[in-house]
Image (cartoon, rainbow, N blue to C red; front, top):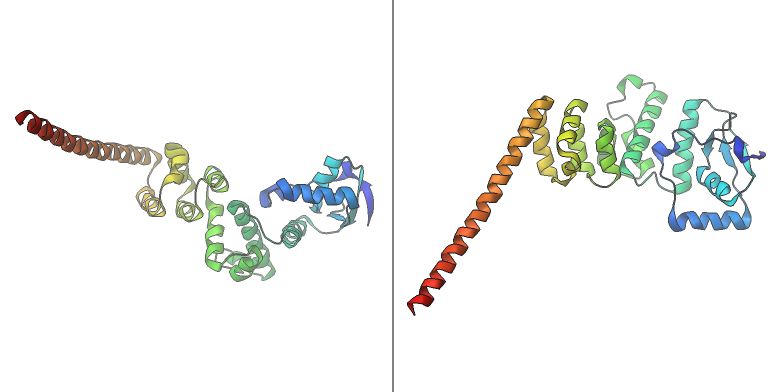
Length: 256
């Protein structure tokens, strides 16, 4: 362990894939601590100076204009470095991640990691280590299985989940569809797809399953027309009642 120039350190390419940078008061709190006391816990990195643990400390060191930081070199291969990236960050933060999609990425990696460690790589899709994964990410087994399914969403839908515009339960329903069908639905509905209830999304999944992009376009166009007609009928019904009411009132007044 020793100090090296900050310019030599490179963030791990998967850090942003798994974790969200700290911000706001939490960031300022750590910044004040480092400004007053320096970096007390060395940044862990590979022999190639790829950071494994300490991305937030490195960000703050750059922000403060520090030229050197303490580092600890860990000689591991790329896959183990990725595992340590997750393990170290979860331990330091006390939680896996708030973003459901990034948490899903973490769960998927751990599933593969422990699946291989058990010698069952061919059985990765059959709940390998679900209870252990759930414990690490701080979720129930049921929620963990739902999160794992979110890895099968197309990027556009994953982005909606990360932005809080599509709930994880509805997103899970969409994840059972092929990427081609998901893309067709997203192209037709955009962010509106997140405005549907879970029950409506489940029905949408059933209706869209196995259909072509053209079929989906026609299906959604027909659905839109049906909704517009239903709304028009409701408005016409209210208008008719109001007309009768006003006409009766007018007749009564004239009669007097």
